[in-house]
Image (cartoon, rainbow, N blue to C red; front, side, top):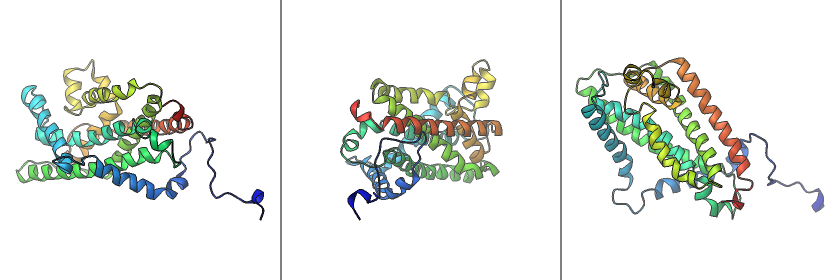
Length: 286
């Protein structure tokens, strides 16, 4: 067989489809994906005194702070659910989204060196971040389970409901939303570095209009003229749905659930399109 007639096994080209998931190529590089996930888990708290204990400390201290400020000082009611458990449930869900967003938003800047030297599917980097944060989310869910069992053992009447079957869907929606927004922001940060500074600040503000430290019903009752800001935030429906299925408190509607599912899929596909277009020439501008 002549060299001209020889078929290539793989062909690297800048020409891509508008939406290119390319699962086959990602599967071929699955070992690299696993390697990046292991690297992320090991190096985050390397050379720290407490190490992986920070996975437990961060949500616990945040929940305690919210309980003192919003429930003890501001007297925000949480119904029959203990304020600490109420806050810990919302924070656990919020942390997964926020970590996916902030980690993915710096993909191009943080990995410019390796991207410029070797080829592999670039989307593996944000995917590894989402999977890594899923590991952290599992640990924090364990902390939430311990707090939940302690509350039940103390005689507090709380129990999950049938909506618990939607738990995997909520995880997918949080991952899609964080991954999609993160890929969009990472594409723009290649030209506008200010966005990387803005992400952390904006994420902190977003927490307070996502019904994390208070119930949605309280906003509708106390500030009805501003409640629409929280109601139209898809993250609100994730936080409220998370509490509803675990603690059987809060507001759940199929309209809010389907609205959030649509937004999360839309953001993911939009982020994928922007990411694929940016990776062709980002190395010239980063």
